Length: 399
Ligand code: PMP
Ligand code: GLU
Image 1 (spheres, rainbow, N blue to C red):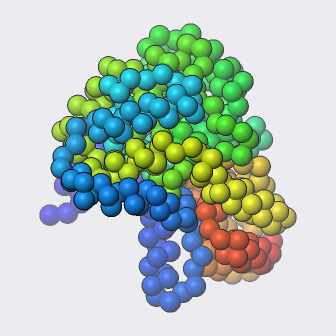
Image 2: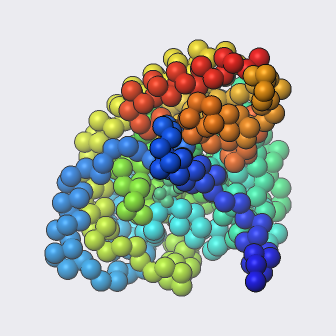
């Protein structure tokens, strides 16, 4: 018995690089090594007390049973209210499906929509799991690359040239993981003009970093002309509400897609956790401004990292407008050596950071860009200062 007996689909699936690096950092820490982990994208804030209180109260109020597969009615109503309030989008509750994290929403959509010949354009650099979820669902991932010189944003011309008769779905996140780039309303309009010309072409817009946006409000592509009937908006509680462990995400879509996703979920996992859903319904009805203290901190940290990281010779950065990542181009280091060790690619670059600076980061290869690496700055200023100092010191030994 061995792993060759696993399904061919599984054998061709890569492990999540973000999760693998976070695990490696935890192991090294447990051996007593002073590792700074900038690998996992997870807010360091605790879930706000009012949400915790609501979950506790919900347990005692009897929210301990199975829920409807697409989610508690009161949560779906709260999601509709939130989508109207923040995104100018009108949805009915039968267009909403609540899942165990945004990750499951994305999997539901891909499993519900994709046939083996269907192609999925994934804006690249992409979040690690899109590629594997599309593949595992039987679709064909087609990365569409936009590099740092264009602020990691796909242009309408690029998109037009990439779409063909087999293209069924486009996936992107804005604010973006891993680049922090944010599409403006004008840019989304221009992309929508291209997309809406094509029949039977859909968009999965991942807006999980919506509340961590430094350039005003994050616009939704579903609200652009011609897009409502072809957009699946995915969002969740993990990032904006610091609720990663609660496993709660949601999607809003045309009713036939939402019903299909609920059908998939009904066979795989059923409704998400009952008392968490109750707490999420209360959280979503709070004014987003009540959570701005987290965004303010993220912005302060972004500026700190920008000044330190941007000052390291050979490290090329953009100015991220959202999320909590930097995705520097470090291709200048390829071929450089410290006398005993040579850096040949982004994987080796992050290995050097881990071994020599004791800083855990993630290779850009996992995000579809072999010239870069990702750090998450969702940690304290002191830790970030120390991490930047260590990185600069080690990289200075390579020439
Ligand atoms: N989309 C993006 C862009 C992400 O960074 C993440 C990581 N948390 C997810 C989706 C999944 O979020 P969740 O924790 O809700 O599954
Ligand atoms: N989304 C986060 C990240 O990119 C968490 C890890 C994961 O869910 O894969 O680091």
